Length: 296
Image (cartoon, rainbow, N blue to C red; front, side, top):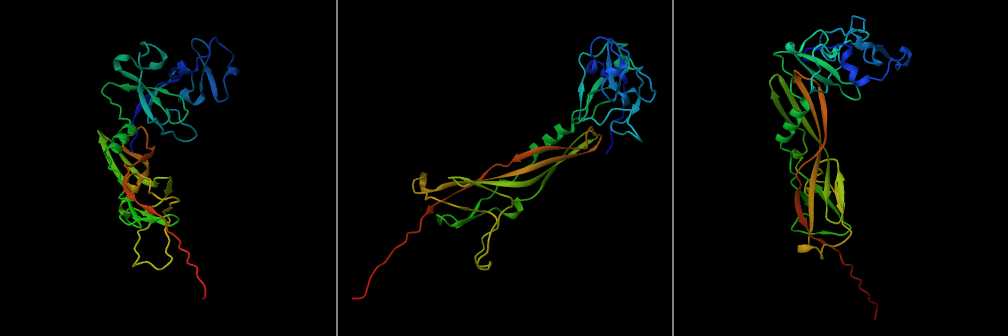
């Protein structure tokens, strides 16, 4: 995937972040940082001095995140770009060798806890869209499965207290779903993979990690088991309609990847729930009858 080529401005980009008050000795900078001239003590990471090796604000055309050899003198990969408002005045160190007439400054915000970097954008150049925004749009357009709830015993038959009631949905509903959205030269694909399913059985719930196993009594050997079932501990006689309401909700893990002009290659949208599928079932109780008798 292609990274956006930009002009990275030199040390001035960090002056608003590392300004530390009155001038101090070079040794007061943290490890890995060096002081530069400015309105007080300004400490910047040594790599941000650029290839010139001077504190004067060198600049050059770079591709974010494309450092070579032992160090990257340009900005790291950006998780997003942000506008700069108000923009620094003409002649401010943030502009490096450029002027406001030649373009504009934006902030490159790297992933994690990295420091934002000023980036010069020449007139006519446009920033690629935020891939995370495109990913959220793709997710909104992605039709997540609404589970078709199946139980065994199957309604209208009732299940019983203490009996393993089998739970499942069609296997085709337990599948990874994908959707792509494109804006200009940026294309983002979201993949939502089923992670778990929450079965709300009425009195309580259970979580399964598959679509469950379909109950096929004529095609399964005796003693067949399932990895998704529920055991009721009370009857449904006192529920509305004398039935427990049942629902199943799939939780998807959603991730995205970017192709084309991307400020980030991939990302995570976290857990996303489907719409719930529903059913209702009666729960009865087996009655034991004791017959006593004796010889006459």
